[in-house]
Image 1 (cartoon, rainbow, N blue to C red):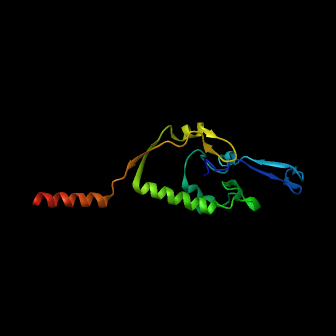
Image 2: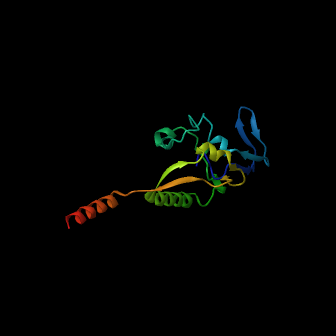
Length: 155
């Protein structure tokens, strides 16, 4: 969700004047555009930004990082109401698929996926996500099959 955030940009309106420091001021009523897709790939916040590294969100690696550098579901009063649900649903679906199948490859890799992204209110692949799923052999199935074969040969 850092590399491919569901909402690639956030829009807000400043209700009051905001002093950013260093002589930068956002006037009241100004429209604010926040390029989340770009912020999530900023090497100042995420070293080696193109690399998928779940450890970058560990407590020690997150220490000192501004909380708004990672905002896949927005933040504040307009935060999406479903991030917890969406995260639980994604984990459930992914674990269900991965218990049954092994992902062999993603056609074109992550770069191929990025080249077909459709930027709108929600970031989505224009042509879907093409993966190759192979049936997973469970050790319990192998043991049962082996014991059945051994019993058959003894009769």
